[in-house]
Image (cartoon, rainbow, N blue to C red; front, side, top):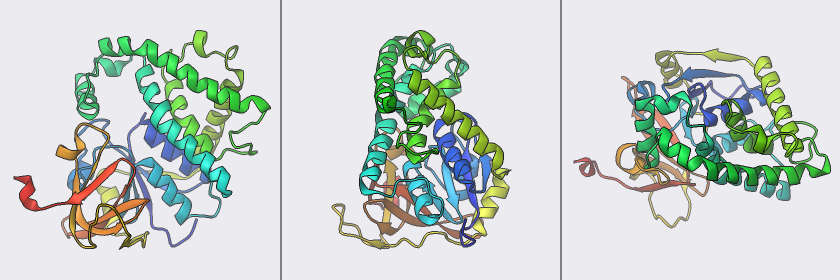
Amino acid sequence: MSGSIPDIVVFTYPGSPWGNKVVSYLNVRGIKYTECRQPPVMPRPDLSKGLGINYRRIPVLAIGRDLYFDTRLMLEKLEQMIPEGKLGATDTQDRAFEKLFRDWAELALFSSAVLTMPPELPVFKNETFMKDRAGLTGRSFTAEDQAKRRPSALVDMRTHFELLEDLLSDGRKWLAGSENIRLVDIHAGFAIDWLLSMPNALPAEYFGPDLYPRTVEFMKRYQEADKTAARANTVKRSRGEEAVATILKSGFADDVKGIGKDPVQLAEGQTVKVSRTDDASSARHHFDTGKLVALNLQEVVISRSAGPSNTEIRLHFPRWKCGVAPFREAQLS
């Protein structure tokens, strides 16, 4: 890892599938980081009060005073900023394959995985958790509703297993035919790994080794590689105030700037609002505002101040599933 990269902090909570995805990536690469654990539901004062961040999803990745949202952007940036030993594909066709698998996993596989969660899990007895997730998704999140949705979701999950089984049918160990775990494997494996942590989430009668032997063995390799990497990596645990202080005293890690030719037609330095476009609450309650620093096909970057000393931080959002628009303070009233 380059000595020019500031401290890395991951804000996550135990059991977060997306947080686990980023942590798995960091561990497999042997990148040292600090973990700051957050509540699984809103509010998250370390982010809102400590850093002035309204974005509601986990994880949040800080590399110095640059903070990144959405795992696809986080992993892209880590690949770019720390290129030695990166896990992503280098060949053009392999990169396309990797991106297709990433989007399949995030849009199709994970959606099925959420609806596959067994309704008897403790989270479906937690009123605070159910209310929080209903606010995020815009739909009822109860054990009764989950029980109704689950049969169809299990069918969908079997179609995803069929895809993996077909790809692995030539005897390859990993999805890209590599000898060791790569980025595409983390994209494909994290959601299934999350389900495997839940009792009876993937019933053997529908997902057992007699039906999907290659996929079952792939997931065993994935979990072993993940555990081995976690044991070998250096991870520091930090409380919120300490993590925030570490960020605010750091330098910037990313020099991205400039406004490219873009359909939204915004200007550098303009005050803008950025929010997710794929949930029920972000545009109204969990958006962030700041001065526009950069806008390109990969990301939108805004600058704002944080902490008692009004230290400048930069927030990086993906263009994927995020909207950016002009903003005036009067719009808050």
